[in-house]
Image (cartoon, rainbow over all chains, first blue to last red; front, side):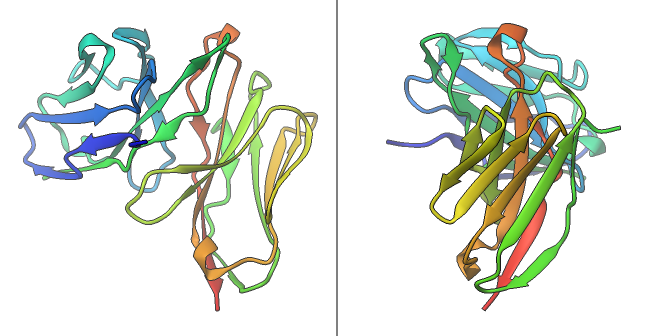
Length: 116
Length: 114
């Protein structure tokens, strides 16, 4: 079974440009999460989708970040315009919904974003 | 103050040693506790998942939770060079609380020397 995949693995852009990150969750997982780790800090939650709906977006830093999940399958995270402080590793995770409780979150390899 | 505190290390021990990794937390709403292992340039990989206070063992790994002290530990017995990685503690509340997001510690970088 394929795991969570993310594309690209690494992106280098200049301040003010736009970048779109993509995540493909494990097939059948209704829950999809985005997390981010900036250098020297802990991994922090950004938002949570249940199918195509945003369940919790309390971690989104500002309105330069836009997340979508088309048809409840893959998700994209767009940063527009990118700022220097957006540099970091962006992780996607997915989990099943089982009999009233949420299963383990499985993480993708991450996208390393560098904003120059 | 961070919700989850974890000593970032680095921690370096000889092969075969017992390793103890720890996290403390301040939010009593946390009910589920996890340890993830992350190799360089990879995503976090789940090692242990516990709910109740007490010990849970899986091979060379033992996870310990003390909810009264808000303290969790991961023990690695007979450590191997392949255990060299960053170990992340993570925790969350119950779905009823709408808290499915994971809150992570900073991670401890561990090196096992042959």
